[in-house]
Length: 116
Length: 116
Image (tube, rainbow over all chains, first blue to last red; front, side):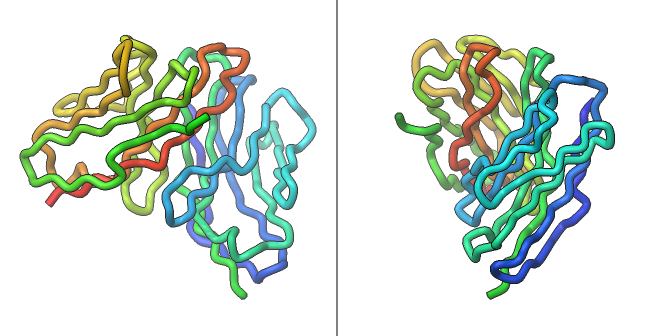
């Protein structure tokens, strides 16, 4: 069974600085997707960034980028030029591309605080 | 194109009552997933449905919980004889039918169930 681990329950970053959130996962599959979701106090799950496992190039979305290390099964999120609006819970998620379910498996989350 | 709609946003039930949570997927989506989020935890998969079929219910508690996605109308997650431990946020997500495009699920805003 696949698992996703986020070892940082909470992180803090100064406004305008850079922060990296860690995520590791375990799977025997070779074809899958990885995601980072942001959950603000409104509870809405907002997709931040997505990575296809067959792509070697790290995904980027404006100030958000990932460091995807397939062999190490690591998928960290880097937030550059942090803004107050980035404060939220961040969840790493795994999704198979080959099984029939395509369900998401989430980590336990990292609470990000942005200090003014 | 409206997103995934869940209602109600908040639901209060007394112990022993029934809770019914509704989810209308995005237009054109025929796959629905239900997740449960306990306080300070990540989302845990409960059940995956297609129209009129339960595909994967490996995350559903064996008793009191049921889900359906009829040919017409929203998907319903039903919890009978609720207990305080059922208090949580319940999220619905939907995705497209076609596997090639089935890389992302879109989440609703969740229903927060409180059992008193």
